[in-house]
View 1 (tube, one colour):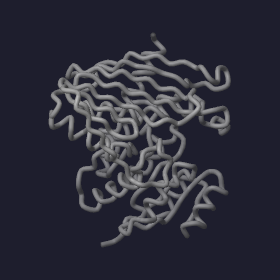
View 2 (spheres, one colour; view 1 turned 90 degrees about the vertical axis):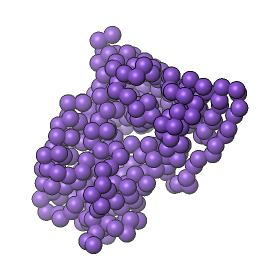
View 3 (tube, rainbow, N blue to C red; view 1 turned 30 degrees about the vertical axis):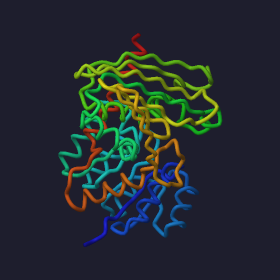
View 4 (cartoon, rainbow, N blue to C red; view 1 turned 45 degrees about the vertical axis):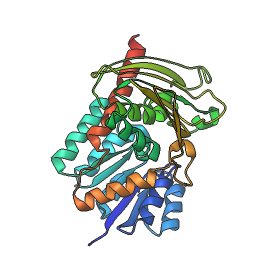
Amino acid sequence: MNKLRIAIVGCGNVSKMHFEAAFENDKCELVACCDIVPEKAEAMSQLYGIKSFTDFDKMLAESDFDVLHICTPHYLHAPMAIAAMNRGKHVFCEKPLAIHYEDAVRMCECAENNNVYLAACFQNRYNLSSQYLRDLVKSEKLGKIVAVKGNVTWDRDEDYYSDDWHGTLEKEGGGVIINQCIHTLDLIQWLVGSEVLSVDGSISQKRLKGKVETEDTADALIKFSNGVEALFYGTLCYKSNSSVFLEILFENGKAVMYDDLVITDEKGNREVIALKRSTDAKNYWGTSHKIIIDDFYDCIINKKEFLVNGNSGSVAVRIVDGLYKSARKK
C-alpha cells in the first residue's frame, strides 16, 4: 500500500500537534509545509526533512500530496480548503471550519462534489471522558437528557493578541466563542444529539476593552429540538486555563466532567471515573489530536465514514454564527 502523502499549511503553535501525528503514523509520509513567515516554514522543513513553501498556491501546484492539514488563521480556512479540494486533496482543518456558516456549507458541498474527505479538528470528541459520556447518553442508563451546562474559564492577556490576526473580526471572526469555546459548544451539541432550534446569547469585553475588536466573555442559552436546553458561559478573564466544566442533567441523575468524570444517580450514589491519556499537549486542549488524526487517515485508506466530517463539524459553526447574530441584534 502506498503511504498517504501529507502537507501542512500554517506552522504556528497548534501545527506542532499535526506535524507530530503525521510523522509518527507509519501509513503516512510528511512531504511539504507552508507558512508566510519563512523562518517558521524552514524550521519545520529542517525538523522533518520536507520541502517548505511560503506561497500556498505554489505548494498546491508544485507539491504532490494527498492530504492537506490547515492550521492557518480562521479567515483562510474556507478558501484554502476549497482550493485544495478542487485539486482532489483531502482536507483536515483546524477549528473552526470557517468563520461563517455559509462558508462551511460551501466547503461541505465542495468535498462532496470532488469526492474527497473534509474533517473538522474537534479532537475533544475523542477524549475518553467524552466517549464515556456519549455512551452514557445513548444507553439511557440515567434516563433521557434534561439539560446541559458548560463553563470555559481561561486566561488570555494582551500578549496573546500581539500578532496580526487574533483579536480581529476580519481574520479571527470573533474571540472567546469562535476560538476557545467552540470545542465545548461542539461537545454539547454532539452529546445532546439533536438539532439546534435557537441560540440566545450575549458577548462583551471585560479585560481588554478598546484594545481588541473581539469579545473575551460570552454566555448563551441553546435550545434543541428534543426539548433539551444548554446553558453556556465562557471567558478569557480568569488567571488560569482551568479544565472545562461540563454537566449533564438526566431524568435520574447527572454526570459532571471536570478533570475526572463524576456520575451520580437519583439515589445519590457517586462513581468517580478517571479517564485520561498521557500527552505532551496542553491539558486544556484535550489529549486527542493524534487520535483524531490517525482515525482520519485510517478512514481515507479504508474508505470509511469519518466521525467529524464537514457536515458534522459545521454544526458548531452554525451555533457560533447564531450566537454572534443573537448578541449583535439583541
